[in-house]
Image (cartoon, rainbow, N blue to C red):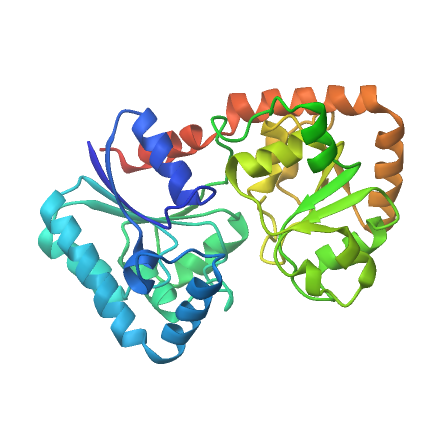
Amino acid sequence: MRVLLVAVMHLGSLGYYCDKALRELGLSVNTLDYRRVAYGAHYHPTGKWGILWSRILKKGGRAYIAERVSNALLSEAGAMQPDIILVQKGELIPPSAILRLKDICNATTAVWHSDSPFDVETSSIELVQSLQFYDYAFVFDPYYVPAMRQAGAMRSSYLPLACDPGVHRPSDLSASMRRRLGSGVCFVGNYQGAESKRTRLMAALAKYDLRIWGSGWNKAPDARLREKWSGTALYGLDMAQVYSASDIVVNVHHRQSIQGCNMRTFEAPACGAFTLTDRLSCLYDFFSPDEIVDYSDEADACSKVEYYLAHPDARMEIAKRCQRRVVDNHTYRHRMASLLSTFNL
C-alpha cells in the first residue's frame, strides 16, 4: 500500500514520526514537506530567516503560497497514485487542492491535527475550509471533534499523540554530560508570554534547581527565568538527553489542550524521566494513578517537586512504570495502525 505523507518533515515533527511508523508497518511512503515547498528549501521552523520569510509571505503572498503548495501536492499525487494521502495539519494547503485530488487519483484522503484546527496561532482559514473535503479527519484532542463535524468533516475522530521509542529513549550519559545537561527540575518548551500558564509555573519553580530549554525565555521580563534559561528549543535525541539527565521533567500544556494530551506527555516518560504534568481529563485514559503524577496548580506542583526530589526511589519506580506504559501502548506505530484501521481498505 502506498502512502503520500504531506507534513512538516524535521526531527521532532509529527510528520517525521508518522513517516517512520508507517514504514515500520510495511507501507511504501513518499513525503512532501509543504512548508519547505511554500517557504523554500532552507526553511526550518526555529530558524531566524525561516521564521522571518514565512511571516513576510503570510502577510503578502497567500496566493503565491497556495499556488506553490497546490501544484506540488497535485503533481506528487498524480505521479505517485497513492492509496492514501495523509496530511498532518496542512494550514498552507488551499481547499481547492484537496478537492482536486479526487480528479487525479483514487486515494483515501485524511488529515491529522496536532494543534487546534480553530486557533488563530496554529491554524488558517484554508485549513478550516479544507476540513469538509477530506475523507477522514483526526485531531489530538476530543474537545474539537464536534466543531470539526460542524465545519463539514463528518468523519472526524480523536487520535491522541504518542512517542517514538527509537528517539525518545533513556540516554547513556557520562557524569560530565549529566552535570552539563541535568537539573533537579527541567522544562523544555518555548516562552509564551508573561501571563501564560507555563510562565507562571516556571516562576513558582524558580526557587528550585530549575533549568529551562526553549526559545524566548532569555527575553522574559522576570530576571529569575532568564537566569534559568539554558538554551533554545530541543528536539529528538538532544531533548531525550536532557530528559534523561533531569530528576523531574515538568509538563505544561498549551491553552489549546482542553482535554487532549500533548507530545511531551508521552515523550518524557519514554525517555525514562519522572514526569510531573498538569491535570487534564484525558490523562488517565492513558495512565494509571501509580504511573504518572499530576498537579492542579502552582502550589501543588511545588509541593510535589519537593516531595519527589526528597524521595528518589519512589520517583524512579513511578518513572519505570510510566516508561513501560508508553512504550507498550502509546507509540506512533500504535497510532498509525489505529488510523489505518479506520479506512477499511
